[in-house]
Amino acid sequence: MSRLEGKHILLGITGSIAAYKSAQIARLLVKEGAEVKVVMTELAKQFITPLTMATLTKNPILIDFFDPTNSSWNSHVSLGIWADAYLIAPATANTIGKMANGIADNLLMTSYLSAKCPVAIAPAMDLDMYKHRTTQSNLKQLKEDGVMIIEPGDGELASGLVGKGRMEEPEAIVEEMVRMLQGKQTRDLENKKVMITAGPTVEKIDPVRYISNFSSGKMGYAIAEECARRGATVELISGPVSITTTEKNIRVTHVESADEMWAEAKAKFADCDYAILAAAVADYKPKNTAKEKIKKQHDSQGMTLELIENHDIAAELGKEKKNGQKLIGFALETENESINAEKKLKAKNFDFIVLNSLKDKNAGFQHDTNKVTIIKQNGEKKEFGLKTKKEVATDIVNELTRN
Ligand code: CTP
Picture 1 (tube, rainbow, N blue to C red):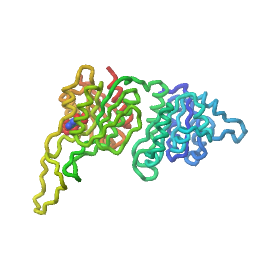
Picture 2: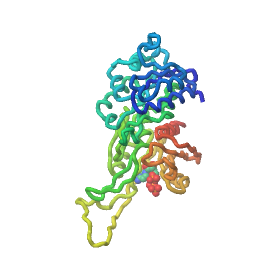
Picture 3: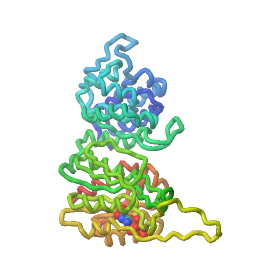
Picture 4: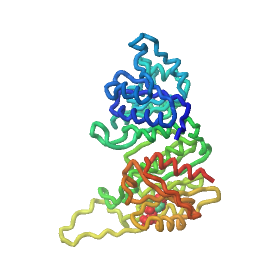
């Protein structure tokens, strides 16, 4: 594939352990037909050698304002004009801070300030640095300045901690660049309102115990972000999750129980063009929630908990769906996957259903990746390979916007 034939991409590399992935990014960009020039910070050289990057891109690496071999001027202005896109990957908290505040103390930064092209960054840092309000406010500033943020993923970080901050994978970053340069990052959801449910629900047994499931909310949040990027106003109804979103145009309503999610969804659906139900809603809740902590009985009789059915949000919205509205559901199955998904598609009046099987490795709950099959009302099935949840979100929204 040569989707970037003739395109000039300036790749900025800053001092993060994720810089080893920049080699793969450069390789993939070149494979797509782009000409790549690399600008590195001094610290980045500690993580990946200029020689590696020069070999992959077949271009000299730019680090200093002056070329130390012949003292010729590395012009940030001409780099800014040469580039069709400027990608900074990895972007450290430090560089993000400098970008938000216009601090031009290296060639990578002066190139940013003189860039005439679209700019994208792929942040990489420890979870606490990423979460810090200063970083978040710098990212918000960059978004307002029109910089595309390729959100980091959740996962194990170099520090050994686990959380959000790991740079997005090279393949996904290159896909974003292709979309950006092909102008494909369409605003095809402009003026549309999309409601999304995400995460698990929590059904209280007593003040300290509950019934729930392993849903992380990652799939629902990725869909919400994809819709918002494509111009939609998003109502995200989220069960308790440990992730957040910084995307503009997403209003998050936090709920705990299926009853609360149902009430919010009912209230919001009528006003929405599309609803995507990615939440793992508990089918049952305890008949009674004890006001005080249930004490252990010492009679060896065990304990029986009486459960009653929750509202089936999807089925109820399916009945209310009006002409022009679209309702999309998920099916997470462990056996007879297609048959079960097709039953749900019909019973809940979905326009299409996204099936994922727990039998597929690295797919489903908690993972950053997923492998889905989209099944439509007319029986058509589209099977996709294992992809990041962000890429799966794109596939789902592409299907949603198709007539
Ligand atoms: N769903 C919902 N409300 C519920 C249960 C499910 O809105 N009380 C939605 C989910 O968000 C999903 C779809 O319905 O989009 C299918 O969910 P799933 O749990 O797989 O289906 P169930 O009908 O609960 O079937 P089962 O648990 O028996 O597989």
